[in-house]
Length: 247
Image (cartoon, rainbow, N blue to C red; front, side, top):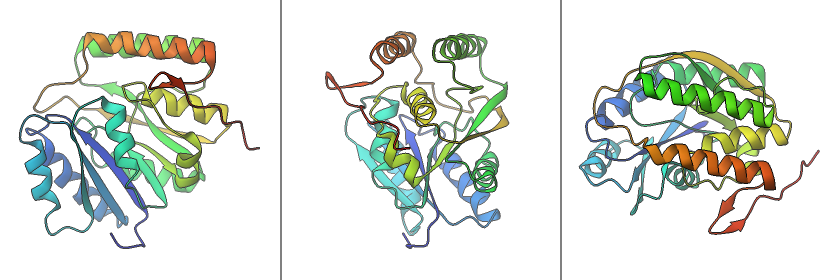
């Protein structure tokens, strides 16, 4: 990737053969249209379908596309963490690779971050076109999260999330599962970072199957309880985030 690349965007994909090509090509078109210098880091997050082959073909002959292979799926967050390790941009971000985010919203988030001089910028899914159960679970999570931690964020799991490199390096992300989004919000709040947010319409899945399962509810509640009691997150049985506000 050319050293002038400004935005590194990570897309974790787990069994997304039905969506991968369209998601990546539409995203490239949207970023090029806005003349944003970028690299896409596509993470084959332990897929068992043809996702890996599709990502490899998308990267052929395109220096702006990089593929990272995670042999075994250990969770959504682990795919993102592995992708971010290879990011070379001045700004770093991540979003789902399932096609539910309109590609045109990615440049909007990035431009809002730059214009507002934020450390972190994310989306708020103001209108959702996914199923009733997902809407209900998300609503409960957000209400419980805000009540528990008193953070001023309208949508914890809304992505893309785009941040400065300084922000990324100081968050020290470690959540391997779906709690990664919440970890970003909590640590940004702890460090008193400036956070921007823009409204978007969250689209319905066009193909494939969601990786969100009933156990996701348990994972989220368990991690939220650990963070509330200890103020840190677990990785491999150890509490790993003890960094204090550098200010």
